[in-house]
Amino acid sequence: MESDNKRLIAVGLLAFIGVVVLVAAVVFGFTTLITLVTGVDGPPQMLVVEVIGEEALQNASVVHLTDRDLQQHPVLATAIREAGSDSGVSASAPMTGVECLALTESFGVYTRDAPILEYDGVYYSTRVLLH
Amino acid sequence: MEEGKKSGNRLGTAGFVIACALAGIVAVALGLVLADALLIYAMEGSGGQPMLYVMESAEPGENVVIPLTEKDFADHPALDAVIRGDERNPSAWEWGRSDRRFIGGINVSYVESRVLQDTYGPDRETWVYPHLEYEGAYYLVVTTWP
Image 1 (cartoon, one colour):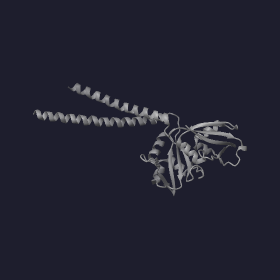
Image 2 (image 1 turned 30 degrees about the vertical axis):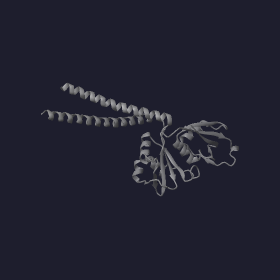
Image 3 (image 1 turned 90 degrees about the vertical axis):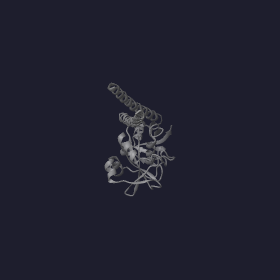
Image 4 (image 1 turned 45 degrees about the vertical axis):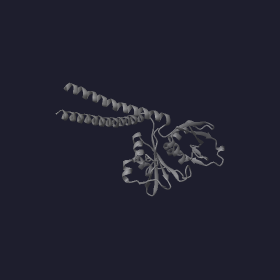
């Protein structure tokens, strides 16, 4: 009788641990899948920057970027670093909806008349691609 | 005698069912906690860098207003650094929406990102962001989870 009880407790304990691990695995797998498909901050977008010559500025507004700006907007820093300084070269970097919002409020990247950004004497035009 | 035994058995079965149900609820809750911890652990090791961004709104509109206290700043040093510290880097009002501007941003850990989102993020039902009021200005807190 006592050994039956012990066996029952052991089986119950194992079943309990099994359910915990199963629920954890299901939630983890499901969340990871959703994250992979959509991204946590919504569908991914792409920031594209292109190096432009000074002659292309015309009457466009120019925002002068500081080191702190690039530190606070790592997506912009990545794209600018990849684009380099040769005119006509463009580069892109993926970003989340929140990053796009922050860049738009800071430098108007996702607006009709997006300003030209200048960093270290190089001018960049920007645009946002939606996926 | 027989009747009393039956009733005792029934009581025992009911107790067993309730105990199983409680154990199930605890199991599911523990599973969710474990999954959350696993997810945070996996994200921290992914090399991604979450950011805290703070925007300023000209008017709170219909949104809920939460006054920021010294305790908020003490509990969340990242928020302190962006709103009134070295990471304050306000943009012009002219970009994006004219009644909103960027105030600053700072790197945070995934755990901090989650805590800030839970504390100052949007209402779970309406998805409307509360406005945080400090010295007459209204702020919105958003975090990234790359």
